[in-house]
Length: 181
Picture 1 (cartoon, rainbow, N blue to C red):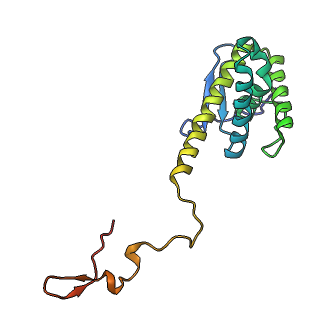
Picture 2: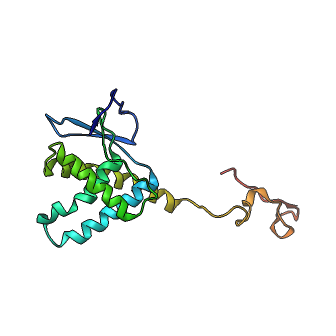
Picture 3: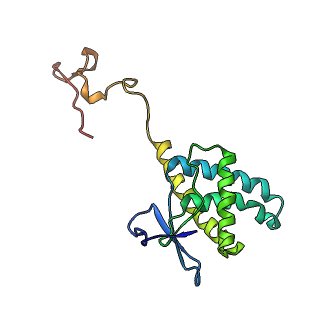
């Protein structure tokens, strides 16, 4: 970990940022949602790891360190420290991302973070990423992303055909009224 020349501001009015308090001496840690592509890739890798290790029990928590490091490192936004390990970016393959995660976990251990503290940071970051990705999934399900020109124009924008004209009781014809809804 390398100290920053100046403190990084952590916005309190943005849902992209959150903090986790590890109490003294480590104190408040800031995190930032890494972006949709990176978060989706990181969350998929972390979920896979949890499924693989779930059956093995809590004793296997240490085996999760590459995944925990990946999640924590991808979200890291500490106001006073930057990680020394450089993030490979969202285009990196799974092996490079897991190597990065292992290096982040090792860096945290080198700075006296206990497994319980790393686990708390991982849990907070993983939950925050899952929550934000869930919002995107729900929006994607509700949105209509059909290509332009594939759908007919709205009924209110086309002229009524002769078949659509309304015949009144007195035998006169008129166009149907459309509501502005």
